[in-house]
Length: 228
Ligand SMILES: *Cc1c(COP(=O)(O)O)cnc(C)c1O
Image (tube, rainbow, N blue to C red; front, top):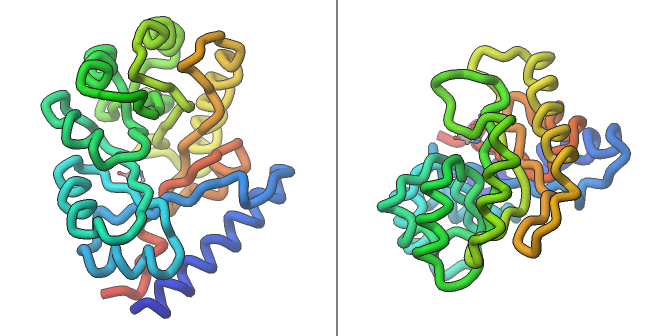
């Protein structure tokens, strides 16, 4: 299994490199977050051993469980899915970055629960899908203004998912919206706001996302091809 994982990982890293070059960047500027929500603890461990050290889970409970079962290895954990306020405290203890912050109430809950500054991304609903979480593009500015007061919250950038129905061209336009939203606010002056990261792109569209400026891609399915 580890051989197959290593091969898959290598292929994805090559594709990241090619896309980075297309956009005049280097692969080191793009962080691969391996999304382990569809695999068990042993496969997750093997993925780390194959060299993928940033891992993401979409359900808080799964993140708690896996991070405690794999506490013996130095995984950098990301929460990429919806976070309920009653799950904040435990999640802060294991996640290095929360990609999916989408409300003022969640920002307040994180600020209250944290004992030191927590890195977050603001999730933006770029596709307008009613079923998707995320802030409206037009609300980003007022949310940033809200964050300024929060000593224990640090915004590192923005995150999005392409629409369920989007083809690659539409996905590209949606990723471009996230980038222009980031650029529009990049001059925002606050010690706890640094709009550098763009977390966008999954198995089906990460190359397009990189061409549009992604600094983090969240890849699951493609990493586990051939692993049964
Ligand atoms: C599952 C998931 C991914 C990974 O998707 P794949 O298509 O399996 O690569 C990325 N981001 C989020 C938020 C997810 O829930």
